[in-house]
Length: 321
Ligand SMILES: [Zn+2]
Image (cartoon, rainbow, N blue to C red):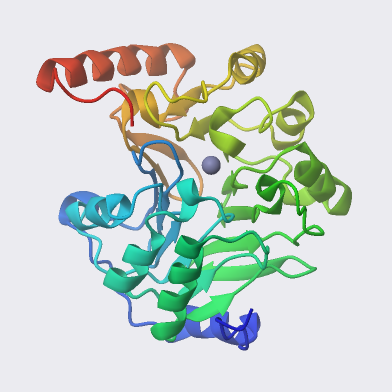
């Protein structure tokens, strides 16, 4: 496919990203990072969309949820007017559905996606929009690659051989690092891809502060081995309320609870915001009673309050998204 001009070398592009961008922190004062990294797992329904804002005001959006305008409307409401980088974890519409609109409205500088041949007309339209705006396209390679968002570092995992039968296994793997804080984002990767990364370079996935559960908490996105390697202090996951897939699956919840890893879910809490100064981290939305690692009891209490509150405020709100 030559819709995209995959021509510029990553090193060149990323040096530009680090050095030449004139991006400023353009979100509202409430969302201002104040020298901290802020990561928001957006309440996007049954899909993924994660906004990263570096202390320097560099911004990246990983995935854009299932619906055409969902992500762009959310970002606008949050006061986001600029994105340095957008990424599609893999070619499923619950991840790229809103990205064409994001690209058209927010004109990101860089577009990261895999070369997977899995495609649809909507995905091709997204690629056309990327090309029409001369956005620099970047891809995972056979070795880890690094993107700098100011002082926040994103490592793009090497891409395993394409799985033609299961697009989930063509997910892009990303490890975010800011000082001692790290987060693992691997799209909807299933065991085949996760094992490949482990064989290839276990240090990519080992010991991350926060784990975004692969595949919305599905049983095929999390297993004992994965949790043993990543050893997260907290798991986050995005899924629609009462979704038809039963996400998160009880097997995943059992594994997390066995390992005492608290889980924050967008279907219960809405948008989840995490903050780090590179040494410590905290959950800033929903507001937790205390800073630092929340316990599962903290989360359960807040989830209950949030759910009741949502029902009270909008009793006719659709429960299926
Ligand atoms: Zn998905």
